[in-house]
Image (cartoon, rainbow, N blue to C red; front, side, top):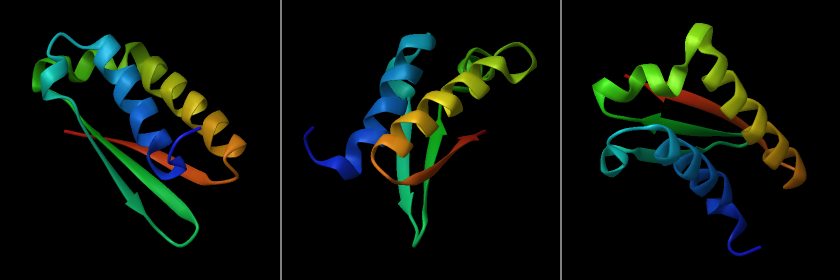
Amino acid sequence: MTDQSHVLRELVELMAKALVDFPEQVEVKEVIGDQTTVVELKVAKEDLGKVIGKQGRTARSMRTILNAASTKLKKRSVLEILE
């Protein structure tokens, strides 16, 4: 793997861009704390529903994938979807 610090950010960005109608408006920021990395996802207002999904299923799935990748990198991370 390349630079490990950006792997999680790139993973979230890739998943989000695959889901939305306006991929150019996808913004992913990584806030690195002492123990946990917060990955902030911002999409176009029209795409918010696509990223969250019915009853939050899509968001939950993205969090599960992020969690699995984080565990592999021996890190802890949280996905926050910003409005």
